[in-house]
Amino acid sequence: MLHLTGAGKDVNVPEADPGTGARYVALPYTDRMELAYAVADLALGRSGAGTVSELAAVGLPAVYVPLPIGNGEQRLNAAEVVEAGGGIVVEDAMLDADRVRSTVLPLVTDPERLAAMGAAAVEHGERHADDLLVDLVLDAAGHR
Image (cartoon, rainbow, N blue to C red):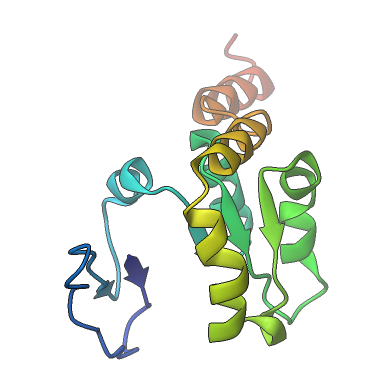
């Protein structure tokens, strides 16, 4: 379990599971998100536009927890991926240890469902969005 907490947020880190050797690692930040995504089976996090776009581009299934503030944009960011089956939404107020046990743990231990969710997510992702954006800018500037 990799938990990216954000700066200044302390987390009590449990010892490695003696039966499986599974570890819980808490870091304030990583500058190598591509490596975190590469080894992940499932993401649990907010549904900001960047996060949803990245997860869909790499086909990583997700449990999205939209921020309960603003105009609901985080829910909207994840809507199409969730509708397609590439993720699920859990309301911020509903995310607690019981919800993790009842929703996240069964999901992370179901490789067939994760594979189906990943395939659905990647259908909504654009791996070459950076190149497409460059093309749009060059076209708009009259350089193509």
